[in-house]
Length: 262
Length: 200
Image 1 (cartoon, rainbow over the protein chains, first blue to last red):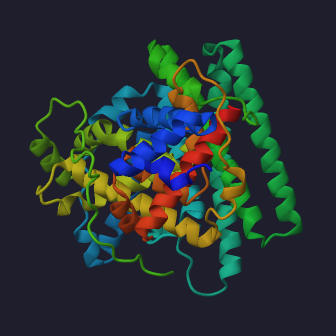
Image 2: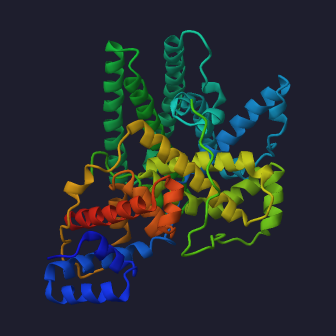
Image 3: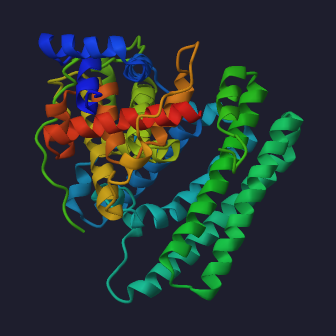
């Protein structure tokens, strides 16, 4: 009879007392199936032990997103100060980052402006996500009292406008600069964009038949967000390639695997 | 919307009580002081030093790079808001780690509450299927992908115990579950990983 699951895991964790360990080892000596299980779990345990100090670098765009969010929040805080909200006085003031503007080539700076516009649209999704911090992070997303459903639809329309404007601008930049990409990467990007465009079309179609459908609304915003993320990655990739930063470019490319692949 | 539950202070992983500060040449006290004064350049330096550690934790706890990126942004935004209250009674990396873990736990709880889905369906799938014979160690990327496929509930317990180094008592406190439940969730996760890696 095989030992139970708990005993095997405790053995791997070194949590068995001497008697139980001896008993198990006696069983393992004569049971290939359990030996195999122990070997597999040891392999996994060994591999997992290495994960503790194996860290992933976040996407290149992540700092830009964060910096924009900090600035938006600061701007909102400044408005609250003007309106006499005492809590806003306690917020950390923002000193401008000297590096950002200097690092951006002109067309990328244009992209940054466009993406800034999307931050307003992003509030739609962030505000709907559960959690008090998401709400305070995007104060504009709160829905005033009154007809909530109508407010959500209006909010969605406003978000869609912002997204569409940002996407148009980013598409223009990526089209102009796409020569900097190798054909394989460009093809992958196009394939991904086509998949997202299809998803956007489907979300829009769903909203036409059910304008109040929350899943359809969220799906549309998620798809907009996916498209902007992909375009931002493309701009970041072009920028890295122009700077000759192969490592930075490779990191971005590694995140551009074709949609639909497992 | 319900207010977040008060939680006891987060303990440190019992296997390893230190949190890396990342590669830095700057004086941490000076950097913190500049961040507290609202210097975005300094905050960017802080972000560069700690973002990989926090992003990795967020990806693993959230179960996807998409969730990881959103959580990373929310964590650092929260850090930016709260750094004024940082008293320097711990290393800044430790403070950030606690903040990040708290935020990830809130997110996981909120999602679980929404989906009302734990791991009851796991048992049938994650039977003790042997992995394919391997002549080489399990690749890190294979393992990371397999982690993303673990069901909610057992993934968080597994990450906290087997990766982050908390013991089962601590995992139980962090996730609001019994110590024995933490143990069984971790064991389920390992069995599931074995099954996933077998098919990989």
